[in-house]
Length: 346
Ligand SMILES: Nc1ncnc2c1ncn2[C@@H]1O[C@H](COP(=O)(O)OP(=O)(O)O)[C@@H](O)[C@H]1O
Ligand SMILES: [Mg+2]
Image (tube, rainbow, N blue to C red; front, top):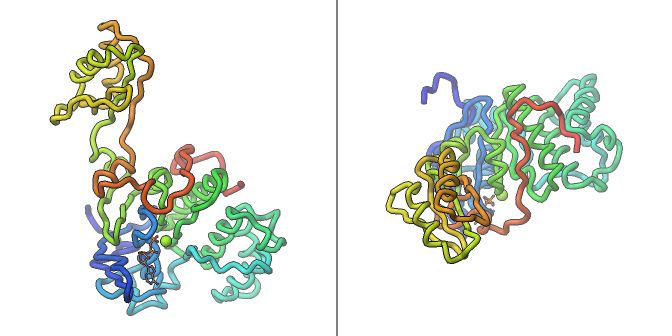
């Protein structure tokens, strides 16, 4: 990789060890370029928030260096804070204030000229789709509305680098998708760098240009979602014969399409599965071959590798099963593609 431009975020050997606690961040190196969405994916307790707290100058690192917007977090904290926006997990929203009142405070806090405060606040409220609720007290907001207000507050001073700590955890599908759209829009159309933590592999997959998978304070894998999945290998095909007696025949056919890395077709319950050496393109040939042998198939499915498979390969555990995982994130249309809908509306 050539590094002609200064990185938005550059971390080397970052460590945080809590007293009487774990080594929450255990030697992390990473680099995020301007305009990238970096997905920091890991289960509960992996060290995501601790990393974000250090990058946003709210917690001093024990070891290592972290430069954000070109400034070292320990030496130039004030400069770092000028250049970043952050929506963190312990959102400090006041239930007794309205969205507009929150914006008024935040714009004042960031020293916007008095004449601009109202306009800036209103435009951000509109932008995150809270126009109709702008004068309602935040205490009555849904989770999704609160996270969108968090985002609007983080954008008040037009930061070039945005930190979002689990921005969609606990949100329903519509709110989650709306937030994804807004984040994608910020990066794609405004060149904002986004450092986003998540426990949802679908979120990292759909939103991030690059993903770092973190576990026990260490990065266990990093790359584009595509490259990480490609590293795991080819998709596998799973077949269930209508006649259970013919599982042996199915296995023999599938064997011909197997990746040949010593992997034989293996049986799970009623089905036979094999990793396809020819990728998903060979699925058609599998179907033809089964047909030629006169094998009737009750169920045939292609399993593409997921980021969960990557996590499993690197840690021996599944991501969704570790942590106190809740509902799965949905997998809507790729928000990185230019979409018809703009701002969040849900
Ligand atoms: N203030 C703290 N004091 C002691 N331990 C902490 C503190 N904050 C976090 N930890 C521990 O550090 C680890 C990483 O936590 P955290 O960064 O919050 O993970 P994540 O955000 O990925 O869920 C966890 O084991 C957590 O219990
Ligand atoms: Mg956290």
